[in-house]
Image (cartoon, rainbow, N blue to C red):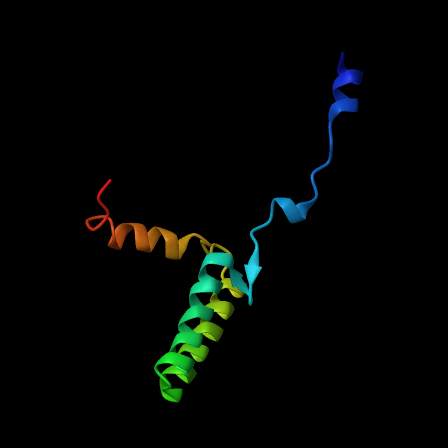
Length: 89
């Protein structure tokens, strides 16, 4: 019986279990950061705000890289907490 179970075990590549990164951050945080940078550059046309958000993005990448207990769902948890009263189910 154990031999039959061992034959059914299929290894799963790590690429399917790891968090997807976008520019060094988890996908949701990276997409949000990129969207803010593009918005401030092209819509607001304010280079000071754009530089501020680029520096903020670099700081987030460093925090995500060097903090061992960094929660990649941080932005989603924060947005759920902040917008809970505005969402009407």
